[in-house]
Image (cartoon, rainbow, N blue to C red):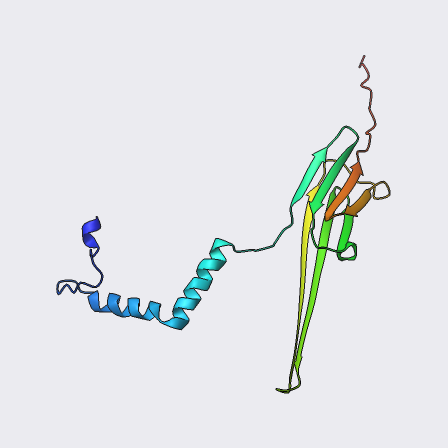
Length: 159
């Protein structure tokens, strides 16, 4: 099977019908704009979603579920916690404004970046949002969700 591939791509083989095409494609792919584009594609697929999610740990105790999110460098005001039925969602908003002004060259540049990351945790029981407690200290967001006690139903004997 390997006999079908040329052993040396620079070696000219008169019997190879596509040698000219292969040589021109190799040259084309090594040119600067295409080479940079291919390197960008390689970088993207090696890490397609950088910083897409923050680390999250869920621990279960007898009385509560404890959710710990690692959010270093985030202010408390950037964090939003939403509760809906069995789900708890933690959202983090990043906003960065960069302005640059140079009076000697008469230009002013401003760029603004807004990014929002969120993680949702599904719990096996409904969440009472009034009993949920959250604290944020040293880059760790700790959320305590108390478990609700279900009502036990007695089964009657049928006669």
